[in-house]
Image (cartoon, rainbow, N blue to C red; front, side, top):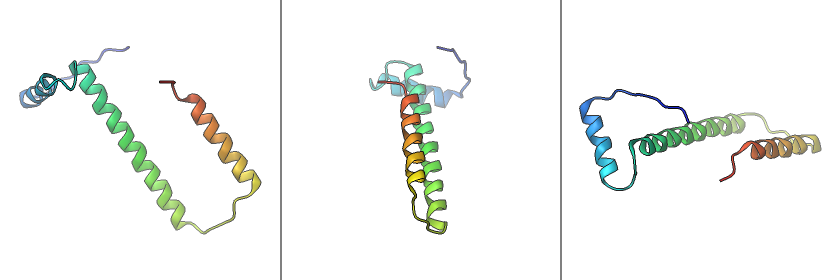
Length: 85
């Protein structure tokens, strides 16, 4: 795992320390990792919503067998890349 140093103002540092003291997080690193994961999820959700809106605005066309096969292959490909939990 890579290390990273950050600088934050005292009020933010105090807030982070309060989050750790609350017992929800065991370390500053754990807290920061969760913030980054949540931001990543939000960006993914925003991208998905944009794509869905684009799809709703586009003219309708029927799905062909080739379309379904490509969609299925793409899903399996993305699923295979996901780390197991």
